[in-house]
Length: 88
Image (cartoon, rainbow, N blue to C red; front, side, top):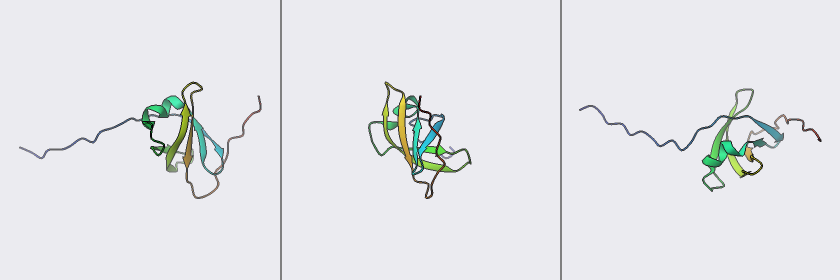
């Protein structure tokens, strides 16, 4: 018999858009994308890839399924460009 391989568990994978809302690394995205990854643990990490190709680990700070919003935090080591928000 050949070697036996153990397949690691995959807990979830999603792809979505989001917006940097604060230069310190706060990102607003959809709750339905991250709620199944959260597992009720505030330190759950997800991968975030910015438009310039840089990838960061992000912490899920919280999410609200009723408004379908989630707040993530990345540590970029420098200020990040912030999406301009409307006032309507």
